[in-house]
Amino acid sequence: MGLRDKIKTPKDKGGKKKGASGGGPAPKPPSMVEILKQNKAIFDQKWKENRQNTAKLSDFEIIRTLGTGQFGRVMFVRHLKSKQPKTFFAMKILERQKVVSMMQTDHVLYEKKVLQSIDFPFLVNYRYHFKDNASLYFILEFIPGGEMFTHLQKVGKYPEVQARFYAAQVVLSFEYLHFLGIVYRDLKPENLLIDQFGFLKITDFGFAKRIDEKPTTTLCGTPEYLAPEVIKNIGYNYSVDWWATGILIFEMSSGKPPFASEDPLKIFEKIMNARVKYPNTFNPMLKDIVRNLLMPDVSKRLGSSKGGTDAVKMHEWFKPIDWMKLYQKKVTPPFIPEVKSIDDTSNFEEYDELPILELPEEIYSDLFKEF
Image 1 (cartoon, rainbow, N blue to C red):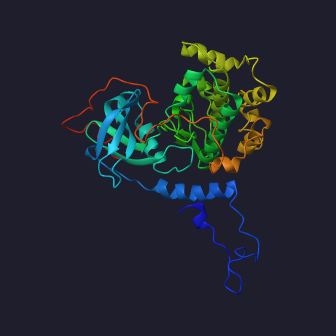
Image 2: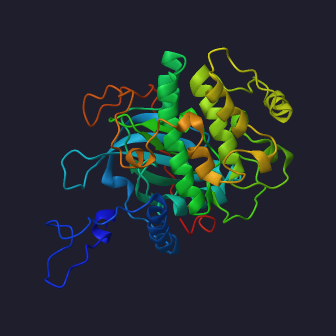
Image 3: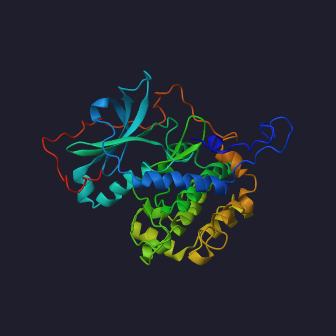
């Protein structure tokens, strides 16, 4: 049920809808707070569910690899049992052995719960999940525009209008996730997909965790995007997502993150020093929002201090953004990727194709019984 279905226009004594023919004011559209509350009620209901094996591998034709990771890969697949003759998805395959050896079991189980519970315009949509003897599978919507990382590498850096457009969608997504009690913890251009219309879709919820204001201490994420409190192992919450937002804005606007090195330890050292060298191309407002997001003191960091997400949205740099129109996708994106058809995968890099691992017997069945 959409938001439009939830709003009922009151009737007057004559049985006519007020506002339908000049008999009264039109119903007021829901505010963002009301939308978030409605979404949270839906989320809470889905969170209680424990759906298992909503599909199987034979339901899909595997076409090609879209990306690779530490635990497996993402494949482009066609759904063979769909009522529509051409229905395509992205299949995320996680090999059980690799997940266990890298101690990521809890993260994978959490990713399943998060994916089946969330629903937001700028977050990738979950469709199915299942498992076999060797692997775990997520079936997600296919986003044909490819990764922001690939597009950013091609152009070097984004014009300010484009960087702000993408950053605003991240802000709205974090507002939604944090309202649900979820910290994302893995923001980076590689996890931001661009759809055929030019809007963002955040993907990869392997590090997402529901904390409900309670601090967590897990060291996870991409080194260049880690907040100081994560490195210090002192306990953190949603503050780390706002720090990462500052890193993203800087990288989109300059072509590289502010703290970079081939040695992760040197990256951590630079983050702890928190000395940012701003390019001359950064105007005062762009520099100001990055500086306030990359504030080492969490109590003073934009988004984590007084005003929360509203303080981020009200920053002068975001003044051109109409937040409700953006949420409704009633704005024109500054860039639309070239997508020739619904099965066009040309915006993704080419990879060597490998067969899907098969095993005669199930491994680690107890660890993944909740998947």
